[in-house]
Image (cartoon, rainbow, N blue to C red; front, top):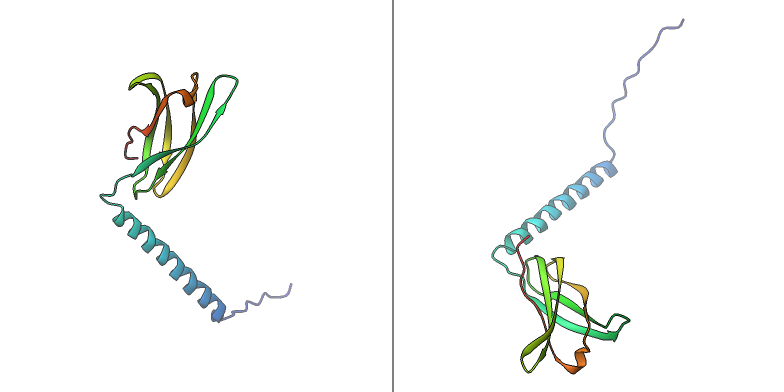
Amino acid sequence: MAGKQSKRVSRNPHWIEWATGAASTILVLSLIAVIAYHGVAARGATAELSVALTTTRSTAQGFELSFIVVNGGKQTAAGVPVTGRLLKDGEPVEEREVTFDYVPAQSRAEGALLFANDPSLYELELRASGYRDP
């Protein structure tokens, strides 16, 4: 058997490896800075919820009122109940509620309420009635 020869190769990193490492480091540090900034800026912020009716349509079970919930604030809202009430002379005729798990900050969510009565015959009150901090 022939003797094994070990060969040592001394290798300096190629400039592309250095450039890739530097770019990756800058990217990671930038992401950490952005996340930290948003974490600090969101302190003391609140959710700013508004509800807007988009469409009303007749269904086999009654009437469907589609809406969007907009959170214009810098705080995510969790457990957001949206309440819809049909009123006649200020007295409630029918009330429905749907709860959204989350409405993220600077975002919106869509949903619908199902009523038995025709909403066009009554005054509609549609609002987000609360939230909790996640």
